[in-house]
Image (cartoon, rainbow, N blue to C red; front, side, top):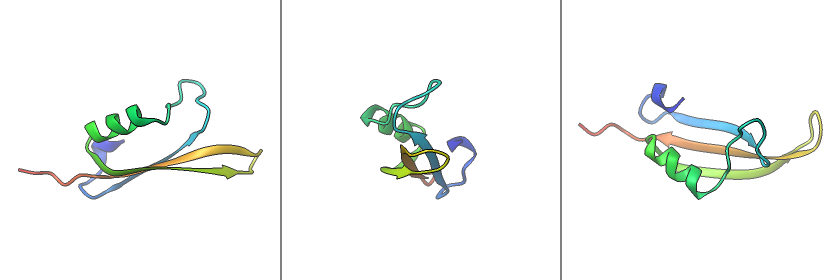
Amino acid sequence: MVRVLKSGGVFAVLEPKKGWAGGWRVNRELKDRLEDFGLENISFKSFTISYPRKREIFLIAGVKAAKID
């Protein structure tokens, strides 16, 4: 997903708090990997949603770094 973003583009994904079917582990290692892919200003925001059932999720977001030539 990061590869197809333009410089300055926003990457955002919702991820369950508890991994499922190979889900991501939301931790420092994930942040490091996203930085390796070219994202900056990475944030993890935890919140509860109630549809279709109540559960905890993360909003994972970052901005694609500008290319340096």
